[in-house]
Amino acid sequence: MRALHRLYLASGLLSAASLVLICGLILAQVVARNLGTTVRDAEEFAAWAMAAAGFFGLPYALHCGAHIRVQVFTRFLSASAQHVLEVVASVIGLALAAFLAWYCVAFVLESYNFKEVSQGLVPVPLWLPQLPMALGSILLVVAFAERLVCVLQHRRFELSDNAEMSE
Image (cartoon, rainbow, N blue to C red):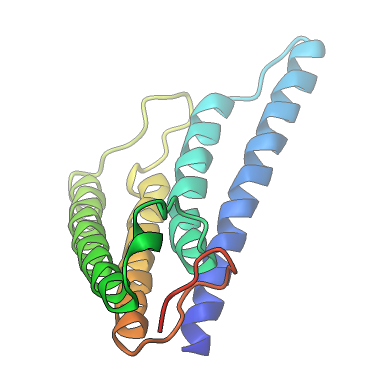
C-alpha cells in the first residue's frame, strides 16, 4: 500500500506542477505583452495545465480526505450504520470513478486514432494534453478501490484527521 500512497503523492505533485506551469505561462504572457509580443497559444496550454491539475489532484485529494463530506447526518448514526454508509459511499465512488476513467481513456484513444491536433498556432496532438485526464481518473479508480478495501477492513484510508472512520 505504501507504493500506492507514493503514487497518490506523485499525482498531487503533478497537480501542483501543473498549477506552477499555469502561473509561469500567465507571467510569460504578461511580460511578453509588455514587450509588445505574445506567447503562442499560452491560453491553450494554460487550459490544458488546468485540466491536468484537476485530474491529477483527484486521487491525492481523496487520500488526504480533502473531498467534501457531509457529517451532519452521519454523526447521529451508530458505528455499524456509519460503516455501512462508508461502504456504500466507497462503492458508489468507485463505480463513478470507473465510469469516468472508461470514458476518459476512450476519449484519449479516439483522439490518438483519429490523429486529432489542436487548432491553435502550435499544432499539438490532442491525445497528449488529454492524457493527464485519463491517468488522473485511472488513479482515482485505484484510490477508491483501496479506500473500499480499507473501509471493509475497518482501516483508515484518508490521511486527514477530519476524515475519521468509526471502528
